[in-house]
Image 1 (tube, rainbow, N blue to C red):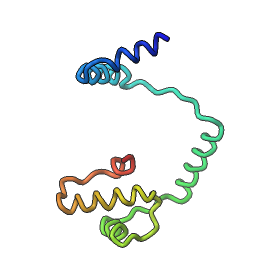
Image 2 (spheres, rainbow, N blue to C red):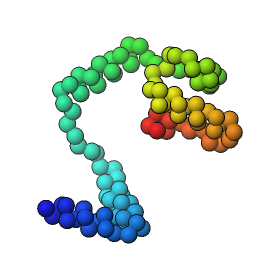
Image 3 (cartoon, helix red, strand yellow):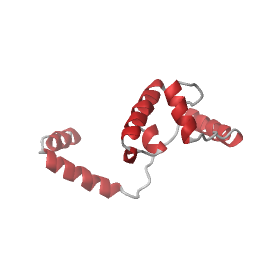
Length: 110
């Protein structure tokens, strides 16, 4: 019950106070290793993916191939329809403003 009361109290704080608290909490865990246990199924799947990647590494493509792939709606990259739509949106944004480019990590987590 104490946890719920604390949560309610925090959620009742003004926005700026909640942002400050969030930053304090983030800094308090910075550098700590998160602890979680994978299930046997997750471990098996992780091992399978690592072996697959080592056996058959992904083939990088050039920027021109990527642009052509997005514009022509070609198949071949393993991304979801939502990611494809987001890639097309970002490509259009990039063509208007090249400074808006993002990394693959930023794209793939969007």
